[in-house]
Length: 120
Image 1 (cartoon, one colour):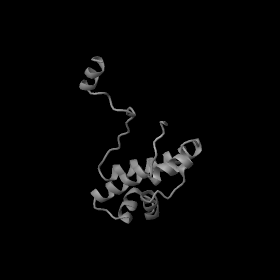
Image 2: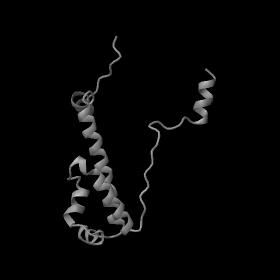
Image 3: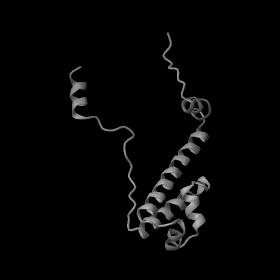
Image 4: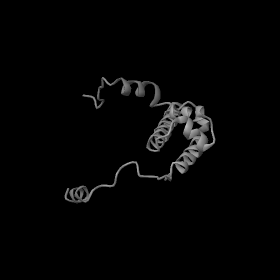
């Protein structure tokens, strides 16, 4: 009997074959996740302020293409720092504040889980 579980999920299969044991690919994947979060925040802030990409670009002092590139994650991974700085500027002109947090990967156990583990 084997402990391996089988899957038919294409995403899980691709992850296992091409990403899981390749640190460089995992780093690239994490960069894309960060870029996706930035893109979503830029879009959400722009929509909440009822601004077009052109209007937001004018307020921030960049080109409309720069806003489009942020929303489409169309920039190099090495520019993530610049994207974060632009996100901070976008938040400011839309009357928002960016807050960065570091959270535990796993949520803290609930009191019920703690109580259960002590009764074993």
